[in-house]
Length: 239
Image 1 (spheres, rainbow, N blue to C red):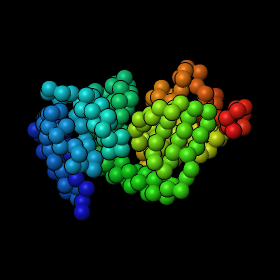
Image 2 (image 1 turned 90 degrees about the horizontal axis):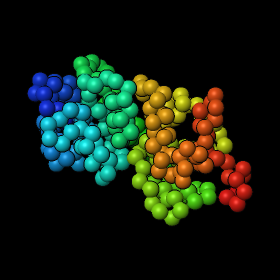
Image 3 (image 1 turned 45 degrees about the horizontal axis):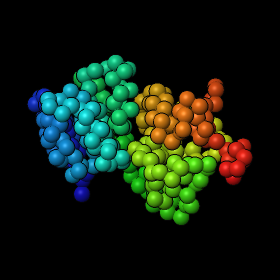
């Protein structure tokens, strides 16, 4: 059964174009024109293409509400705003990727296919990791099996990409990853984004698990390389 895609776009010409492009590629698509309708229908979709500028509830607010309920559904932000600040803001609130208007049909389809493949890989990895014991360092606990993270006993809600990053780090303590390494390992080699995508997700992840994100204990910056997860052997009392 083909995976359904929800397109949220108030411009009827663009909305019809999205449905046509996706349909011709074998992805049945539903089209709604407002944030309110998006919040009613997104649970039936495998992926959401979400316009940033919407009447009523805007795209950023819709993204926040979706992410509060489902950290994993792939979400592409569609925006006429091409400035770095707008892109970063969309990524910070949980969008997986973005496309600026006007867009190329081939690029749209490539992004959709890449996100769906990545979701399938993540589901497979989660199934394969069922025997993993929780990784505990200091007050941080990462349970790969249950897809759960706790800091000092309190649960922490992470998006799918945040969890994938943290799981990769925690499984490889002390190993330095470059930004390109992280893009390949977490986003996939087909991802055609920017290095600041990694920076944005790392900053957001630190804000959720670090006591002081400005002085990170768990996810450390390796100058000239990228990032690494603290090695418990280097932290007395944590091993």
